Image (cartoon, rainbow, N blue to C red):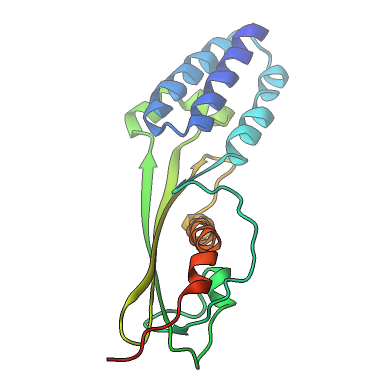
Length: 216
């Protein structure tokens, strides 16, 4: 029995770690069968021991994917300043925010887009797997996709740099755990800003050497 329980938990956590929402019905079905089988062979206190690891496994698992991948570049000054154009000053990558200057001839135009997604375990599947759900199996998954675009131009309108980033943040939710879109949106925005920052840090040497073109 112990091996069966461990196998069920490992299967569930593996699907969570890989971020495969398509595997969720299979995981819930497996846990439902396990729950019905275990309910007839385990006393209530023993079955209750399954709940904490299941909750901890899903509640603490947030998937973050970025494009391009985050490499961990070290922050440093860009050596270039710019004015904000058609941008929200409260939503900027740190590297851009630290380089803002109203007197610069160079302009920064930064924008973010966020899209929400929601996957729910089918109702029919949830009814037949209620023991698994009571044990901590997920009811669904929240996903937030974020895109960011930064355009740097000089006073003549010449493009100096263009940078794009994408991020997807997802998290399971169940009866005892989970969070809404607000937390995931914050994490997704932070992820794309970090990608933009790293692109700027890698490009800092080139940016420092650029001299704004004269207005036409």
